[in-house]
Length: 356
Image 1 (tube, helix red, strand yellow):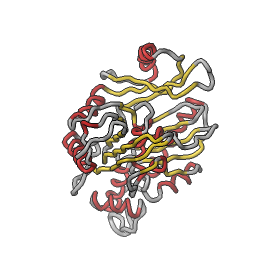
Image 2 (cartoon, rainbow, N blue to C red):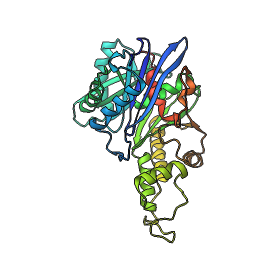
Image 3 (cartoon, rainbow, N blue to C red):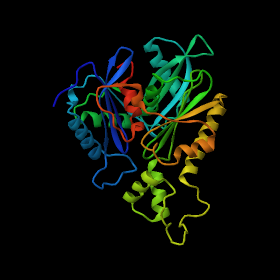
Image 4 (spheres, one colour):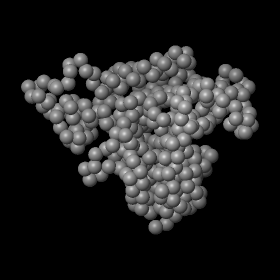
């Protein structure tokens, strides 16, 4: 087993269903992919835990990944990882440019005004998003907060296998960083990013001149699997297979026979519930910012390959759909034969962060 050279940058995305890792090196203005892997957390018939992986699952998964990649964790010098979910809040504000010490102090007070904190001990940080185009004396600042317990749990996962935590980002920004480094963003209007994971979908809105916005939607791949289980009376494993191969309208007899479903006829499909959540979030964004020009959807995450998803979104919102393959942003010295490259967006975005 060997370590990584000190100039390599490693991005690590510990998801609820799998772990993704990308190791890159800087080659002039571009990055070259050196190693990558997506490690499933639940194998051999183990059922996915909708509450997220416990340490007893995540740590062995991390160890398997590093062993298979022949990477010694304690030799990694430049590591960035991410957290996300309901325990992470983010809000963009406009602020006068200050020294780092002044900014850290004043933004803690701002966070209490703009980010809902439930009284738990919190960790607050910020990232400068660029100049404020409406006020030359100010900059766009993204405030981020999470609970101390969530932050420390993430660090414990890393330290358990001798990884030094390094930079900890939020998942929506990691995906966005991967996309914007080489992709052309429109001068006017905003793009809608959907990172479709196992238990949730993260919606983010971003434009060159407009406020960044992100929100977690409580619908992910697991919800589609459960709909198939209930509608057709099949097992979890069978529903997962059917979902991947046939989508949400498979050639199966519905539960109850004679084409009758045990679900209420008035109950909405998972597609429709996801569409409603997206619509509700976009209406809120328009109300808060006044920006209503949405240019296109950018889809990332493990749920992107669900048959019919892109067609549904295009029909409902009448917007172009881009399935974003982050490997296209990189040169590579290793084979890239990924069944689902779209789920690597956050890991690659973390690896290519400019301040690592």
